[in-house]
Amino acid sequence: MKAWDNLVGLVIRPPRAEYTVDALGDEVFALGVDVYRREDKVITNKRGMALECSRFFKADSGKLRPCIIYLHGNCGCRLDALDMLEYMLPLGCDVFCFDFAGSGLSEGEHVSLGWHEKDDLACVVDYLRSEVGVTTIGLWGRSMGAATALLYAVDDPTVAGMVLDSPFSDLPSLMIELAKSYKSSIPTPLIKLALSAVRRSVKKKCKFDIKQVSPAKAAASCFVPALFAHGSSDTFIPPVHSEKVLEAYQGEKNRITFDGDHNSARPSFLYDSAFIFFKNVLYRGDASEATNLVSPPRSYQSSARGGGGDSSLDVTPLVAPPVRIVPERDEVVAGGEEEEEDIGKSGEGFEGGEMLSEEEEAELAEAMRLSLQTYFETEAKTEKAKAQVSAEKRREEWLGSGEKKEGDVAQRLDFSHP
Image 1 (cartoon, rainbow, N blue to C red):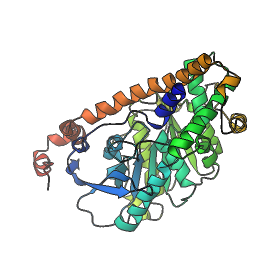
Image 2 (image 1 turned 135 degrees about the horizontal axis):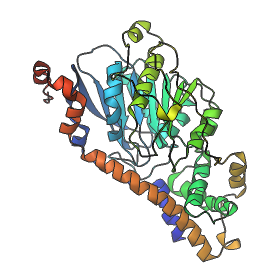
Image 3 (image 1 turned 135 degrees about the vertical axis):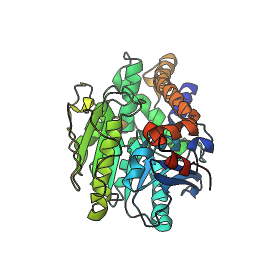
Image 4 (image 1 turned 120 degrees about the vertical axis):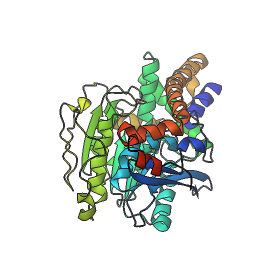
């Protein structure tokens, strides 16, 4: 049925981020008084698709360093990692970002909300360990990227730590909630049955089962230190999803709640907290390196408004950042074992005619499609705006008004290509 085809198409083929390599900025650039480089690389995944990648690293350092891998959302691309560079590079580590297969400039036609993406990540990690020779690896995932990190970390406990921004608990539950949010009159049992049609179609087209995309289930087998983050006004993936993942998570964990929605610019205190978190986990085996990093790159004076008041972020090696875990007041409960069991009972097929008229079935599919489309259109606009930010503007933001007054530094760091 065409209505279901349209819905499935939106799940596995959301708006694709479009950008040019120029949007990544210069290959040589500066943060403060330090010079950094960007090196682009193409890695082939296990399905034979080319992944477009970039590594940012300090230009004059020949020693091996830790690396933070940024994992973008389903409508995102590697440009999203640029927001974290000014915070993470001063940590003394590399930053690596790439377009998942089916995203950005990489090959591939579809995304899988974490299922195939975890294998893309495995190829990237293998490259960094075997060819670059990084010391430790941290992961920073947002939305689909956070789900990918969780699914991957189950099989790689050597990951030093993860920042998980807005993970969903499991894909079927999220789709049920999205359909209900757009058209609340649809009975939940019918939505659950409808998911079997989506499930069957996705299996056929993309070779993965939406029921298996369950970060909450993966969390029960994860022991990597993790810092969770979620916007308090997120209506696409409500905060209750990360609550569920957090509850199941078996490793060291902390959580930050901040003002904002799914696509909001992340506040500076989140980046500062991530700086401290990664400092603690990436340098656990090298106390001498950790003690040289005494504070985040920017002074942190403001309170974590969404985190329940003032939060002192003292930099103490080997201690997780003391950010409060704040219970959400949202009464919506993410779908759990009951929903998962019901979806499983529906089997491989969904004969909509047995319970719904063709008109009702089309209405249900359209409601689910529109709930996704509304969100994707907003995220696509955000990605387009990022692609249009000029390299010149980014330089000005990174240098800051204070450093630009230092003529000798500005002259020496002219951002010219090698």
